[in-house]
Length: 199
Image (cartoon, rainbow, N blue to C red):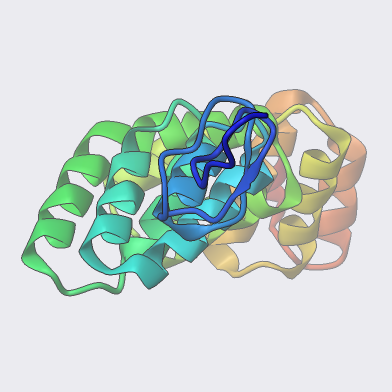
């Protein structure tokens, strides 16, 4: 007869943080479970793991900081948002490095993805950070938006945004040669004729 062992086997479920889980085992939680979920290719799973990691003190915080270097920009952005209000010195240093190195990459990725939340983030940046570097970066990355939902969201800002948001939305449609939307925006008083049709 085989000896009954409390050690996990290949197909056992393991309560995370108790024992090192063998490959292929189901992990129920703890830091070990979070580490496993962070290796999952599904973005939503990785983000959920990051949110849970913060419950585990410094070790969990370290996992979130490491996620600032993840290959997926949505995961990096989620990690950033989880850390942005933390006042720890180590966190603030990591965020400064992240902002220096990845803002361009993040904005370009948002422009290429072209989702509603991506366009919202770009437009909010125009409103909240009115400096030349931001406006040039947003102008460039808005030009990368090529999805129907992204175009519709930029159209929303053309008719409903603040003045600076309407200006950049108008530039987007002018560069794309979409005159009917610009004509409608002029007719409704959202932009003037010079914004819509000047070279």
